[in-house]
Amino acid sequence: MMKKILMMCCFVLGISAVSFAQGRMQQTPEERSKQMQTEFKLTDDQTAKVLALYTAQAKTRDSIRTASNGDRQAMMQAMRPMMEATNTKLKAILTPEQYAAYEKANAERMQRMRQGGGAPPSQK
Image (cartoon, rainbow, N blue to C red; front, side, top):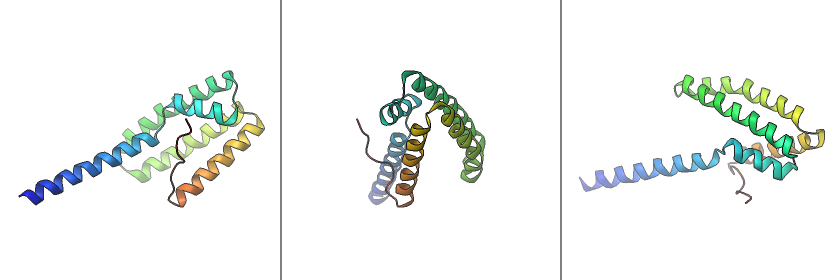
């Protein structure tokens, strides 16, 4: 009986830790736009446009998650066009130099994820 309780506590703690980690990896639209402002030297006008874009994307992403009912494959298929549209809109907001730096940072982040490194530590 004691072993079952201990195992259940460990299971709940493990789930909580994973949920907490996932929550930390998801930045709010405000955090993402501020990070981009700092990292890519965006103007206040660009930052406002990026914030509006990321806010709309977050709403769409949430509705896709709800509609997919846990079907990860369906969710990823539905999110791909949304992400492509976001990148197209970002390209219109950013200067060519800023967009090139954004693409480079994205490629580096994807490479780290493929290698199992995840996102870099927060730069606050």
